[in-house]
Length: 134
Length: 202
Image (cartoon, rainbow over all chains, first blue to last red; front, side, top):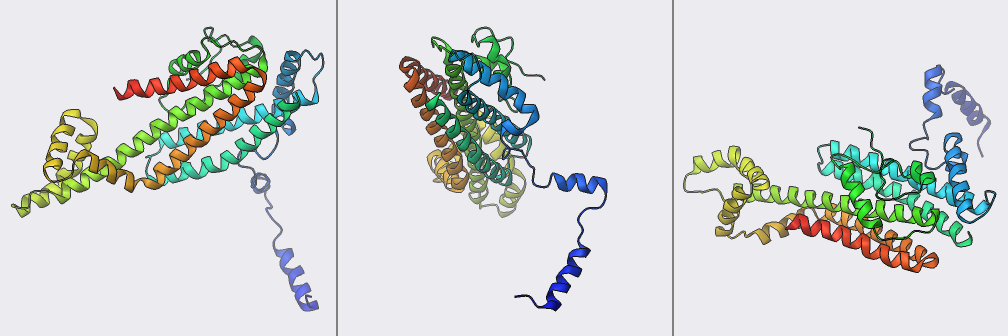
């Protein structure tokens, strides 16, 4: 357990680190954890939600459902995620082809695609599960 | 350049889905017309019944396109390592009877010759013959290139394999809904990719 002295030292130190103070610093730190937004489902993104609704409607119509079903919604979310992932993969390759295509850029390509693959696998699984019920 | 599939009538994408298909995954010098032809060649003769079939088809087309792209990257990587091996062999086998000339060749000309080997088929034949006479036939050069680039080549091979697995997975999903579509799609996508590479190799 921390002593009284340690606790007060911790509190003093914590006061020294108050995070960004300027507006631009705060803006930048807000997006520190955001790189490609793939961790956020398309359903939660206000712009992508419009596409999700449209696609869910198309899928529901294909199933002769007059209203959007939950399953169609799930399929649409996964599909929009897959399209986002594909766009990101395209931009990764775009950057690679513009680079010197050296050993380092090949390594960078490998690492970026490896990370992206995880999201793609999950999106495929979500769509497959949804379509099994659909 | 804005790349769009919107005017693509040959493929027959349903109007309400066009906006979701309207962003072909093209990079670098990949040409929209090639992608359209590729899409068209795979879709030709298929009879998708609804929007879900079309989503699956789009997946198979894009994965097949990705496989095609990775194969080009792989070919480029192998070629680049071959060029490196040729350069090193040219340096190592430079005529030792004249030490000064050999040094000049190693410093100034070996890299140029290796570049000529990579880009000019006549130069390639001449340099291959030169290296073969010194005990390094093209097969040995290729083997050394594979050894040098093993890590990168293996990574690309694995990616291609994972796209193949995913494509097969999608075809299985289609099979559950539409057996004939799955059969035709498997045949079409494999044929289109293989045909492209056989033509390129000829």
